[in-house]
Length: 433
Length: 105
Image (cartoon, rainbow over all chains, first blue to last red; front, top):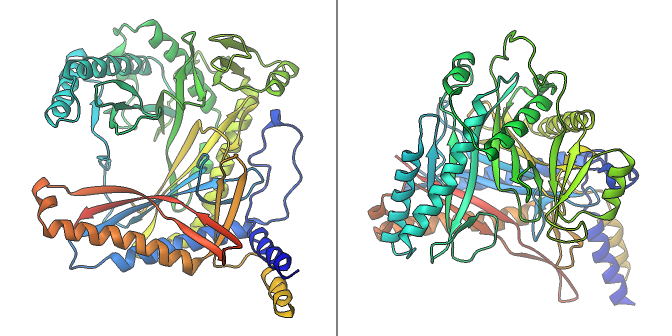
């Protein structure tokens, strides 16, 4: 009897913990009817975020002593959204919903880009050519070989070169079209190099690996005039893969042009970047990735400071082609939903029952637009909890908030849940940094 | 028995302002939630960050870090915390973090 009451007591202790968000945010139309509203209130979420804010600030300030050589600069914490709408600090498996970066405030605001030195990086820009890729690949391969961590110098150099050349090829298509509100700022892929010199995707599990980041970063400022840039790259020839990427980015940017991003400018935060996880399918099509192995690479989009002025009718203004969504492990109910809602799809790489097959869903413009609008609203919803606290913090504050989103067959449906696959991230930055 | 019932009523109140929620999936893919008080979490979190901080200072004293001329170091860390009463029912969580340390000028 006593044992059962004690168990009940502990169970209540656990159940009482519920802190959730409205199912409106994470509901996927293809997963069934809208679930009932949970009894929790968003006030509890505000308390959770406030408590985390306090813990991080207190810890950082206690460590901040002048006699030390090393100071804590950034704390990064992940939050996760459960399947019932519960949200909290992420632990165990699953996908993160929200990344929170707390950082010591600079004495004065830093102008320009902050260097990202967490990984060895092969960096390319619009002045790079094949020779630059080769030279950088050789330098990285040599450094790894000389350190004794990799045996096969030639293998690493050649594989890095191939990957780098592919990124450069994709980047060439980015300057061929005028964009209204956003432009592609960065293309990134993270690679792992094994001891034997095998280079593979970052997201595959490899033990004792060396990580290398390949990045194409645009060197112009986002308020530079657009016209000249297009002229500069008109003569470039791109491969078939590059052409597919070209069509995809054009469609993606066409969808984003409809977003009311003006709403994302908060008193303390601004939308710095949008990040999309992208992959090529077995058939060579490119799409937003919702794959068990993760995306092949990421593209980062930035808001233009000034929207493109009268440029005449843009070819994607009225007729935006469907956006590709690349999915594996599709359930029968998802196929059924697609058929019922006239969403075209194509199975590649085998039969649809084959676990290795990939399915490309062609997302309707109207639904995608609606989904992206919801993503913007969710970003605003979260930032609302932080706005009041930022101004009170003297030394430590929330530097970036990064909500992650999952695409559904019916368009972007909201934040990614623990069991979901993140395909898009919004990066909001505190204006004080 | 009475004390237990009183505790039960007291505990089954709305989420307290100082609660930190932990969410994750178990080995079977089922969702689990655990709650810790802010003060318990604060203590564990500070201890973890402080261990890294002291470790860096101590490495520097041995000159192993200064020789390499690092100015920024990033740690990925996980914190194992266990909650519950006795051995009857225990909850454990292991949230992960990233700490970035920089050398003062």
